[in-house]
Image: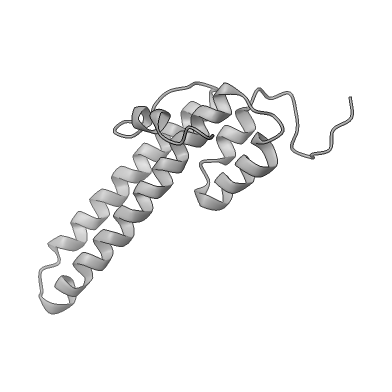
Length: 124
């Protein structure tokens, strides 16, 4: 069996699912280099989930930073800094949960956004 893609293996989409968790660049590699030629339910599930996760985490991280940085600089209230860190730690925990599910080859939703992601992005 001859393949055109160096990423094409009989992995049932598991490799694409795992790679999609590594920020937008990993998602793009997983989608264009791995998923397009080997579309599976597992890879589709995780691609949808990680796309929404990456969008939400980027908006939250940048949005909260842009909102709170002027407050932190103008005052001595460092407690807002800890709020940012708690949000970032929460996002990291959600990312780990999704990544572990992809490594195990499971279609397990990330809490808070996993189920919503499956109804979004119908073209994936």
